[in-house]
Image (cartoon, rainbow, N blue to C red; front, side, top):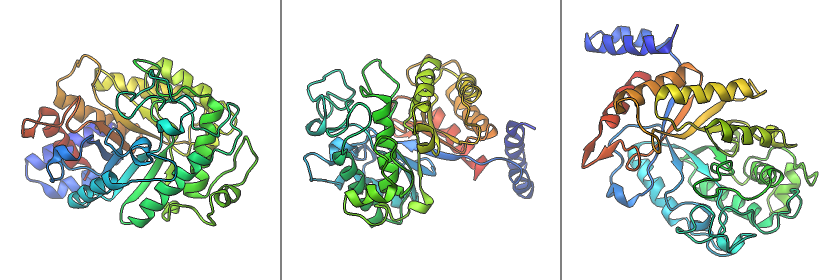
Length: 361
């Protein structure tokens, strides 16, 4: 039976004041975590968001690799700390961290202005880091040291769980700019090195190294992230459109890629929740990894012409994703693009978010 029925029954029960029945109904439904992208900690004016949420995704918020690692051996996590303080205020202890975007000083193509974010931190951020060859060989020490530093930082803030790490954002997207200009073998190497250093798992296809050897290469005897047993490695995220998914399938066919992807990361942007679910279904039908879970790590109607009212879009998306077995979905974003909050009040989407959140909690 469809989860939508149970969710709607929960609403009916609450409206009738039958709280005992709500518990019974909710005991039969799937669960899904409500995740947020927020973008600017300053825009919150020292207050947590006005919506309830389960998890925060670090992306487009001043806490990415080029923002933190501005020179070799130098790491400034002050913005990240501001975000963690906000999350503590909100009572949220779960995050997803995106590792990618190469600092210009570490880029193999530092003059490439066609990369994503060239206007925000300089050119070359879509290129692989220095020390990483096109076939995935090389020391890759700059990336390894970055993974070590960010893992140790979150270990020092162990009340916040990094539930998953992603090596790169939307690496299959080439327009309007370029998110990744490297090879699939290089992306596999980034994912495998990150997994070894942060979580102590796997082997390196291109070099034959064990996870322990990778750890020793950066002076570690155990994973850089202390809560590694509770954490996972996401795949690099792919835009949801069928052509982008085709490129993602080619990546998964690269030696070592599928084993390094403990959870698939999708971005299901669409003009309706129905279309988003069609994209998810297409992904599941085309992949040969039925037992690998998938998260929707970024989506909304942004960039499309909305064909539903905003409230029904939010409700339908979370209900349908949960019904399909997707256990997390991150909204982009709280204040930007498809906002949940605007003009000092919740938007239609924000109010729908709160209602849908109550169905699952």
